[in-house]
Image (cartoon, rainbow, N blue to C red):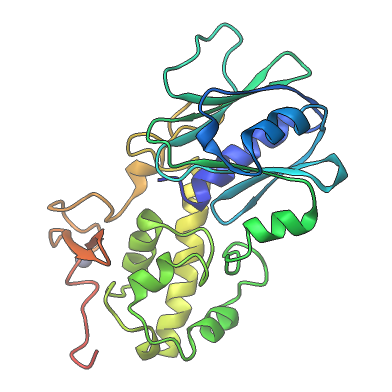
Length: 278
Ligand SMILES: [Zn+2]
């Protein structure tokens, strides 16, 4: 599932290519991909709008349009948002095709159909789509002190807490496991037991894991592709995620896979030990 680094990679790709373009015909090959408003309204009202900015909020990709409108995409499990080659045949899982005034198209593909498009006409409508999201971990306001403040008074296990988009926006299974390994924290560790030093380590690890993912243009396990249809390179750089049985890059102990909150969770039990008191 695409997380912050994957969505950010697509965002940066689209920024270079579609800002300034005007939307033409919109084809919904599977109208169910539209979350708001109705598919008919999208086809009638989206054409004619100009793309002003490619933004991101958590795992949502937000194309700001003129007149306070926006086209927002959440890729969920298998969604892809990309610019096909001009001669490319339409793939089987194409759900929406948006024509642009330079003759190109923007394609939304989604094998498993969990991804959604949101067309909003006002800033208030867009705010409603994004209302549940917590802070952005790569913004300047997300300091070590801000994380300490967020953790204060929370009594949750770290893994489910960090996956919660209302706590911090943009982290998912891959980057939470990688950040917890880097910070030497067990996924079941209770958030209210962290020492000051551990909070510092967790903050550094979250930022590092996300930035490394962006530098390597995202992690492709199976479905993720950037806006050009190319796989990301971050899989080679993962320390623990989907590496069960392989040696820990720090101490050589085989990486373990456990289940936490119904999610496959990867860790080194030696580097990320669970104190008896938690
Ligand atoms: Zn280890």
